[in-house]
Image 1 (cartoon, rainbow over the protein chains, first blue to last red):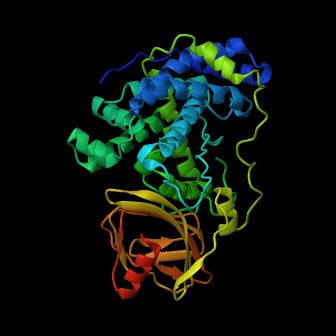
Image 2 (image 1 turned 120 degrees about the horizontal axis):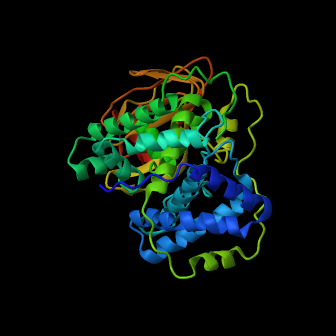
Image 3 (image 1 turned 30 degrees about the vertical axis):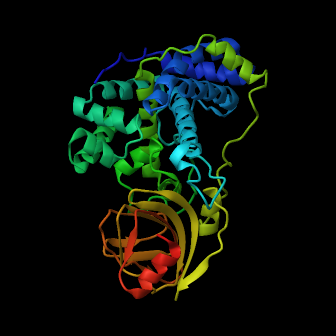
Amino acid sequence: MQRHRPASACGETTFSGHIVAVARSQDHGAFAALFAHFAPKLKTYFRKFGMVDGEAEELAQETMILVWRKAPLFDPARSMASTWIYAIARNLRIDAFRRNGAHANEVSAAEPFQTQDDAPDAEMQLTTAAHQALLHKAMHLLPQEQAQVLQLCYFSDRSHSEVARDLGIPLGTVKGRLRLVMARLRRALEE
Amino acid sequence: MKAVNGAADGTIRHHPSEETLVSYAVGGLGPAAGIAVKAHLLYCRHCRATTALAVAAGGLLLLDLPPSPLAPGALQQTLDRLGGTKAAQMRETPAQPARLRPPGAAAALSWLGLPAPRLRWVSPGVRVAVLLRESGGAQGGKALLLLRVRPGVALPTHGHAGTERTCVLEGAFADEGGRYGIGDLAEAEGGYNHRPVAEGPADCVCLIATSGRTHFAGTLGKLVGAWLKI
C-alpha cells in the first residue's frame, strides 16, 4: 500500500487559523487556501467509496461549502481542523449513501434522522499542533498490516467481516489490529 | 459530544469494543447501532475519548490522501454556490443538557434526537416500540427498539445472527454476561444466546439495536419476534 508524505508540521495551526478567519470575516483568501489543500483530498476520499468522478467532485465541493457555513461552530480549542473537516465529509457521505440506491428508505420510523455529531471532547486534548504531530508520526510508523486494515476500515464501505474476507484473514485479526492501532495512538499521546 | 452530566460517569462497567467505536467514528455502524453506541457515549467519558481519537485518526488519514484533480474552475464554482451568504449563525447541537440527575430515558432520547415513542404491550411486563428499521441485508434487517421491562421479568431466551447492542437508559438488567446499569452497553456477538432479566426496583428501559434475524426460543418468544419482525 502506498504511503504518503506527512503534512507539514505547521499545517494544523495554519488550517485552524484559516477556518477561524472564514468565520470571523468571511475571508475568501483563507477559504481558497483551505480549498486548495482539502478539496482534492476530499474528492479522493469520496472516490474511495466507489463514487464516480462527478459525484465525488460534487461532494468535495459540498463539504467545502459546509466548512464555510459551519466555520463559526469550529472551536480551535476543541478540535483539529483535519478532524473537523473529516467529520463533515463523513456525515455527507453517510447522508449520500442513505439517499441513494439500495439504501433508500432505509430509515423508516424515525425521520428525520440526525447525522451523528461527535466533535471531539474537550476532555481529550488532541488539539495542539504538537499532539497532531505525535499522532501523525505514530500513524506513519504503523506496521504495514495495521496500516492496511486501517485504510480499508476508514476508506471503504466494508464491514470488518468483509475486510477480513478480502484480506483472507480471520475477523478476530482485523479487530485485533484495530485495537493495536488505537493502543499505539494512545501511547503516542502519553509520550 | 458532551456528556449527560451524571453520577453515572465513571461507574460504567460495560463498554462497546474498541473496534465498534472505530466503526462508529468512520460512520460505518448504520443508524440503529449508531444510536445505541451514541447513547452509551452520553454516559461514558472513556469511550468518548476513544471515539475522539478514532475520528482524529480519520482526519490524519484524510491529510495523507493523494489529491484528485478537480474540475476546472472548481473553486470559483464553489465560491459562487456560497452565493455571498454570510457564514451562517447556526448552532448544531443543543448546549450541554441541564444537569439531569438521574438522566432518565426521556431526556436521553430527546438528546439523541429521537421522538418520544408510544410503547406497546407485547408480553406480560414488557412494552416495546420500534424506533427505526433499516432495510435488510443478506442476514436480515437491523432495527432499533426501545424496551420497558418490569423488574423481575425475563425476556424470552434468544440468539442473534448479527451483533446485538443494548444500552440501558433506566434501571438495570442482568444476563449470563453480567449486570448492566444505566449507561452500560451490552454487546452480544452473533450466535450468543441469552436470557436478560430486568432487575428492581424500577422498570428497566433500554435501547436495543438488533442486526440480523433474532431467534427466540419458545412459543411466546416466537410470537414476540414475529410481531416485531426482528
